Length: 275
Image (cartoon, rainbow, N blue to C red; front, side, top):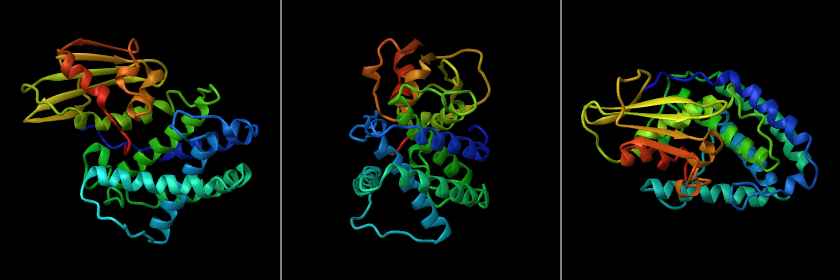
């Protein structure tokens, strides 16, 4: 497993980028369609606000909501979260863009201060389920929260053909966190010592290695001498692929696999969100 990611210093940077961008949108821009299916730009911004409110409620106020229907499986959890998200977005359509911006500014700061006060190696309130964990450390939960904020901001920006946060500083950490789901996507075994490489091209991209050792797939920093498969993915589509906005059949020509096709294409099925 790669070492913990200290992502906290990037929260103020990403938050400032969001608020500044939203303040410059026209009324028509707020109604543009995003890649997030039925959500417009305003809906995605409202969803980010919902995430802040939830964090403040659970961490500051120790407030949790009881679940009406029992959650017995991952699919049950996804359905529950999708329902919560849809309910909030529908209600938030009553809010003006100005109100959403004002609330984002204040709650972004409060959530950041909450995260700074958490012990990174204490157990988190929420496990990072898409990474196959039933229990997670705070540092990983905070890292997951960073990916949520980057992803939804980029969905907003893409609707305006803007790529200003697809940088080494902000996009690469997002990808590095998302790649923690790669072992989960590998639902086939390899021979002992099998190694894979995934390269994501463009600014903010990078290289990741996966090893099969003692019956498990594990991400490691060390580069092996040879690979069973090498996969290259265009960085312009990687964030959408791993968030299930598009699937691998939609990106012909935007990826290449050398070597074992079955093993090399498994990373294309990786989903690093609750979906």
